[in-house]
Structure formats: C-alpha cells, structure tokens
Image 1 (cartoon, helix red, strand yellow):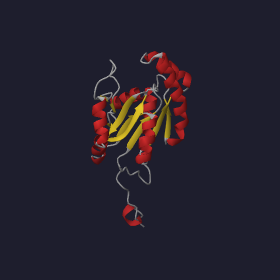
Image 2 (cartoon, helix red, strand yellow):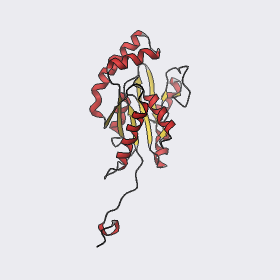
Image 3 (cartoon, one colour):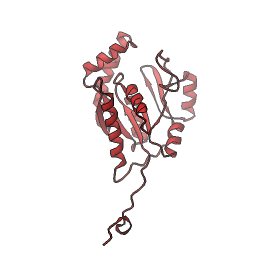
Image 4 (cartoon, helix red, strand yellow):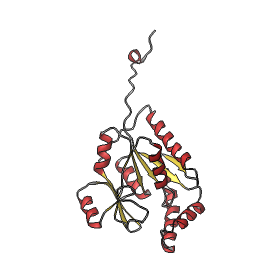
Length: 211
C-alpha cells in the first residue's frame, strides 16, 4: 500500500523566511558573532541598525551601523519607517522597516542585532520572530570585556554593568540562550546555525507578519 505524501494527505510546506533577533547585554560580543556569521557564508540578510550615537574609529557606516543625525532619525520615526525605536544610554537606535520587509518578501531569512529594550518591542509587534539571547559566561567576564575595549568612562562602564544585570533577568522573554565564551566564536556561530535549522524543521512554521 502506498503511504507516500500524496495518498496520506501530508502536504509539506515550503520553509517560510525567519526574522531572527539577536540580543544581549552591551559588550557581550554581538558584533563579533555577526561578523563571524558573515564570514561563514551562511545565507542571512543582515539588517543595519540606525543610530544617532557618534561613530567610533573602528566602525564603518552602513556596516556596523547607519549613523544618522538626530533630525534624520526623528523624521524617519515620524514617517513610521522604523520597525522599533529605543533610546539607549542617551542615543537613539532603530530598525529600518523597509529593509526587513523587502528581504522577507524575497524569501530571505533576516537577522537583526538589537539591545534588550528593542528586542522587547519587537516581541510585542512581531511575536513570531525567533529571539536569541547572547550571554556572557559571567558578569565578571563581561566586566573584563567592557573594560578592555576602552570606549566608556568609569561612570558609563558602571551604568552598563548595572543595566546588564537587569537585562539578564529578561531571559524568559527569549526562545533560546547562547553563551559566548571567550575564544569560542565558531561554537557560538554553530549554535545559532543549529537554532535556525531547528526552526526550519518545525511542523508548524512561524509566519512573520510585520505591523
């Protein structure tokens, strides 16, 4: 007896594109993880976040962030061109809605790097997104990383660490957790790729609908 897909009534659906949200405390290594993902050639569309904060010497516009003036940013916000918007440490950050929608419409999996506050906003508006929490092995390790990068004053460093402790309490809002141990970027990338593979194997696929 033929029990194949046509006779059984089984209709496998084509894989729907995913919206993947990578978040975690400041200094946990989100940029390094995304860079390694890009180097691996894994097929993802990487959304460039807008920000009003000053560009650092090591950063490239339209690669690390799209650096804009406060006026430009708020004009886009007023025109509803941002999927989410948040003020973090006195600077504005936002995700361009059009870039996300166009990539999803093309059938591409989209990944967004965002802070915890922004992830919470997207969770409310796009609950079917895949939320990944990137965490340090410990607060002590995070302190060492933030101190070594020399981009914050003592007061700013203390604020970021206090915020990180509070952000760690938001873990329950996420679907997955990945620990970023020093020197193990390849393992982190493999974990994220495994999460995406698992999501592609869901019996009931996620359906992303942007507001």
